[in-house]
View 1 (cartoon, rainbow, N blue to C red):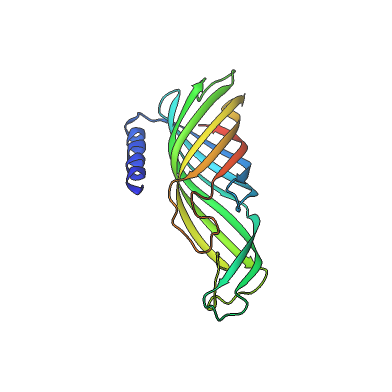
View 2: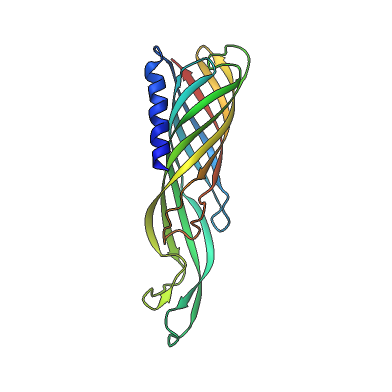
Length: 220
């Protein structure tokens, strides 16, 4: 998966390099995030900054960085004994999890209606790209469990993890005044890798998140 991302990044920036002085925009937004994966559902709030290189009235490259607050969830799980001589053979308890996500993304943005420098009418755009998701997970067990004697579904403590993602988005914007625009977007981060971690209760195709945001874009 790393090879396609590297090729895409090289193509995007080579396009920008060969364009004669592409127009640049910087945008900043805040929004709410929802994690949809079962057993790992939560709400979080965050902020994202984007740099847009407008290679044509309707096409361009974007680079972005976003970070979100801790999302909290809990799971009722059971630890099982490794030996048939261990008593009790099973311990049920609650795992309280806290997950926080950051992400770097690069991709292509296209206007479906209007252009990046629309002065009066509203615009509609979509984008697709690849991202590197940087996550942190903290687990706290309601009952201490000795991992020497028991197999646990998820470990207690703190750990970092990474995911490669496919980033998709659809947005609408309206000009405010001068070179200032207000926009709203729906975004999704879809993991393309798993990299299993013993600190994450659900590893397969997770976390799957979607965001609803609002922000301001400044055209230079």
